[in-house]
Length: 77
Image (cartoon, rainbow, N blue to C red; front, side):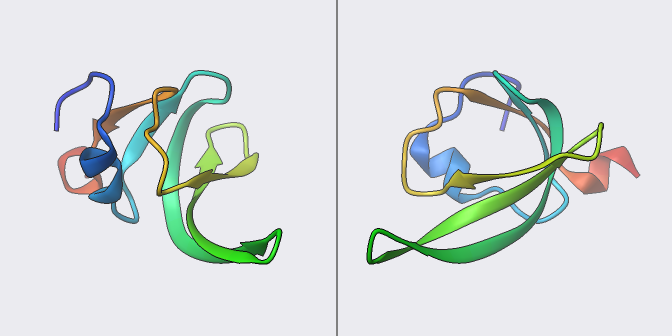
């Protein structure tokens, strides 16, 4: 993956430890993939923690036009 807008396929391939940039929340690390039930439907979400310590959840099944991939954890370490 490159540092550009992600396709749905790219988003589905994100893994724990990958770093992304969110249009609103900034740089964050994918910490987990969680299942949440909202409005009677269970969906998968990426749990992302920002550098400032905030946590947010991104739905996996929508095209993420608001995030960009930075790097996998393996390239940072």
